[in-house]
Amino acid sequence: MKIVLASHSNLAQGMKDTAEFIMGKQENLSAITAYVDEKVDFSAQLTALISEMAEEPIIFISDLLGGSVNRVITETIAGKENQFLIAGMNLPLVLEIVSMSFSAEPAKIKEQLQQVIVTATSGIKLIEVNPDQPDEDEF
Image (cartoon, rainbow, N blue to C red):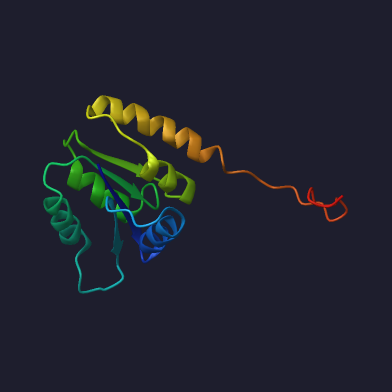
């Protein structure tokens, strides 16, 4: 299973670097950045990356639902049952996916990804900070 982080500008590369800082080098993790160099066509860059990965299943994680990066990936992987796209990249999502063992069946992979999304988004919380309240570490 290959995992490709894709974003406008350098978010994907930064997310990859952060994930590897926490988990160590990940051979199955790649980053692709759009619009960093105006001479590089994102669609062509994406197509080349996919062709390098042969027939191996690929999970794409994009930065923004409905954004141009997400749309290009959607158009490029349409009809390919072993390629998946999740929009809304965040670090818990990336760490969870990188650390998982996935089924070989596309339908099972899709189920696993749905569960990962639930787990990753459950970590998004508003933290109430009360300056009068002592830290839990204080006695």
